[in-house]
Image 1 (cartoon, each protein chain N blue to C red):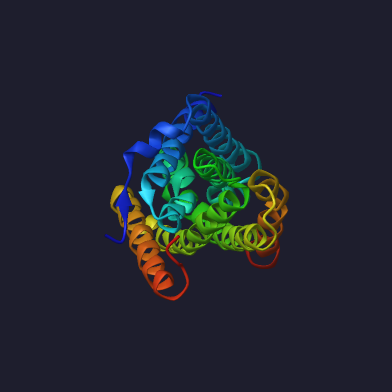
Image 2 (cartoon, helix red, strand yellow):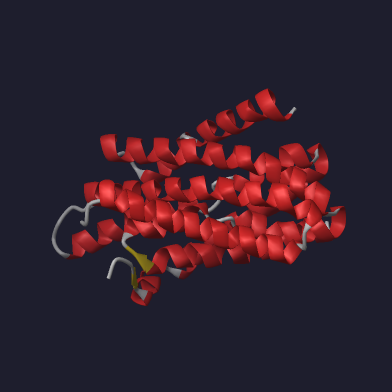
Length: 144
Length: 113
């Protein structure tokens, strides 16, 4: 299968790591709202695409991959950082799709149903992200 | 104040959910897609539309395009630095955040003011 779902990986994330992600995500979201209130929607809208998840996710991936290798008797440092790099490459593709999400909202939100527009934009993000990933996988990503 | 607390709670929840999706998928390149999920937007646009209307939210979405371009530049730089030099991920992701700020505010200055 090209893509796998591995629920066991949830156990390797510690409770305080979940709490940190919640805290950081909440702070960034509230801050984006505050900036919009203070400086208006043009500045505030920039922060709707702030990389809120990414630093914590990249750090966790590095840490978990390193631990995995250390359990097998290897150092794991370089492997962890390579894994984080690969994750970042995927995030790059997702960010391109995020621009499409924003374009759909900008174009259609004023004149169409809000829920329908948000749903369409979300599905467009997911579809384009997966398509870009499939294209990149054929060309660049190697199985490790 | 209530609005900000609500945004904090909803935002934390939505960001965490997308992060969990990133945790459970393999390979890592696919899981990485969810690092750029529209989590903040989905968490807050409902509130924004309710309080300020759809046109206000659409203006935010226009700026979000610039933010997404900035995010692309930021994560591409992080990916390259991590792969090329193998520094600690936390240090790189935080140290290169000025890339996001520079690109997003650069586009704002050139196109959105």
